Image (cartoon, rainbow, N blue to C red):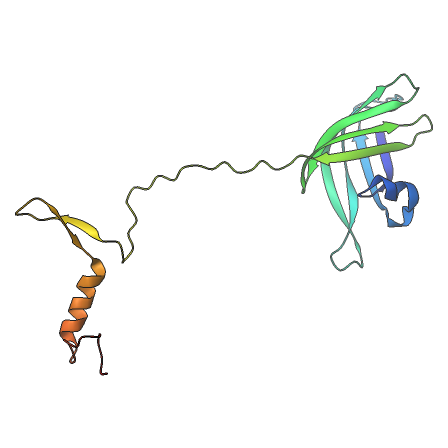
Amino acid sequence: GVHKITGVWALELDTLESNRDECLDFEYEHNSTGESNEFPLSGKYSGWFHLISDDGLSKLKSPEKDVDLKFIKNSEGYHNVEGGGSNIYGFYSITGTLSADGVITMGRKFEEKPKPRRTKKIASRRSRTSFTPKKKRNSKSGTPKCVSPIKKKRKSMIASHPDSGKRYGIGKP
């Protein structure tokens, strides 16, 4: 048989208790393989909950699958509800109660997303900017000498410019 849980939900418990007009609908179903008169029935539920659209004018149905609910009889004569599930917003745990008169109150706590691990970046080459001198070995003495790539470029630009040799740069004063 099919076991259904229908009701309303809100972001805060106070809203559920004091202002039902701001609450939105939800529905869960559990399809059992045989006829079971057991109530409540623990197991995997699927269903949906309503959200308000971004423009605030319509309701959107957001699906949920594999919501695991366990109903545990307690000493007060009603049931504690435990479980968990996931939807487009992430994984969550559920805690709540099912009263003797059949009212279920559940709260969800979403898991915090783990912070990304910082990993060391291993570069295969050293990065260079045009201002970082590149070391070259002087083939005669074996000692390093600095050659800046920008200086090489400038020298070729200066040599080809008609006003080359001016003290303060390329161009006319």
